[in-house]
Amino acid sequence: MTATHGVTEDDLRRWVRLAGRAPSAHNTQPWSVRVVDGRIEVGVVPGRMLCAGDPSSRDLLLALGAWVESAVVVAAADGVGLDVTPTPVLDRLDDLPVRGPADPAHAVLVLRPTASPAATPFTPADVRERRVNRGPLLPAPDLRAGAPELPAWLRMLQVDDPAMRRLVRLGTAWTASRPAVAAELVRWLRLSPAHPRYTRDGMTDRMLQLPAWAARVAAPLTRRPALHDAALRVAGLVGRAVEAVDRTRPLPPPPAPGAPLDGPQHLVLVAQTRGVHSATETLDARLGLPPADVVEAGRALQRTWLHAHRAGLAVAPHSEVVDSPHAVAALRRRLGLRRSQVALAVFSVGRPTVPAPVSPRLTDETA
Ligand SMILES: Cc1cc2nc3c(=O)[nH]c(=O)nc-3n(C[C@H](O)[C@H](O)[C@H](O)COP(=O)(O)O)c2cc1C
Image (cartoon, rainbow, N blue to C red; front, side, top):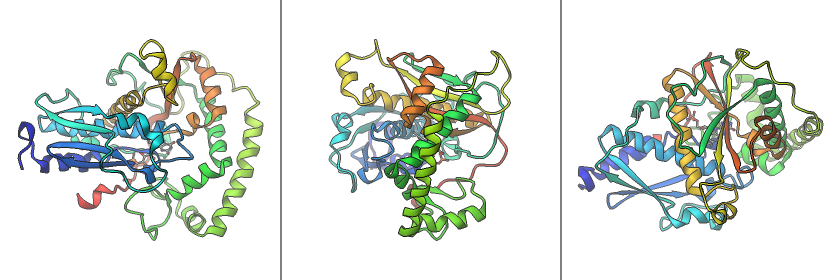
């Protein structure tokens, strides 16, 4: 069937399949996408939301933004634009149930083909081949030089390595010591090819670059309830001990200004709330930002990650730093953020030392 601007529904389905390579926290792929009457409707799958780890839906909205940006890049290669409209449902994510499939009547975003393709330097191959890399990263030039420009209300700030090490430890301790958050993470681990969802979603032993022995030891912990509960209890004890020590210590002193990096660069995506939105809008939103803006920030984040991929650099996200109240408070102090600024994402970037393994996708099965 022919749709708007000569775009067939097969084209739309092809774009949707490739956009499915977009990144999402824990590789939940929380989007549910339908092609209807020449447009693309994006919904949210309640059972793929991280209720414990992402209560503000920050990572969900960033992932939706990354999905949209990926679709826009793929459509642009066919000479087509995509007009993106948020629906009122996007502002009411808290009304969604905590489990189950997406409701087809409740799309959060609608994408309609237009005659003007986005001016993007990226290609469908970039969308397909971009990957997170959790291996060791070597120093690289500042990623921000030559990166696509950010909207005026977003900034990419750098945090120094000594601070980042402490913040990652605080964030990891927070994840480990909140049983619901840790259990949710474990639910998305697929540490052995015997896992029934190994090729579909979640994080595999290969993606996490676990040594074979570690995956063999840990895989049963994710599958056998008694072992799982015991492992979470131990992780909780260790996490609480680390948190108790680290939260009261000041961050280590920063390196001398201008000192060259001896490891990866650590970047923080920061959004400015005041002045851009009305006070009511921002107060209504849990993150202090309207959800549509967080989707927009997710688009900018994906452009930055695609730029890193193009530059031969690897990205390793560290959301635990913005999840943990202790870590995010210390981060805010280190960066000198104002109350009106929100840290949305933290990631390291550098020259990879090992190739990044491919992560599974639900949509790859039909590709
Ligand atoms: C908003 C967001 C937050 C993420 N947070 C983390 C994180 O804290 N730690 C991590 O290792 N990966 C994180 N990721 C990366 C995902 O785990 C990754 O995108 C997913 O597993 C798919 O792998 P791929 O990006 O290599 O295709 C995040 C991704 C997004 C979009």
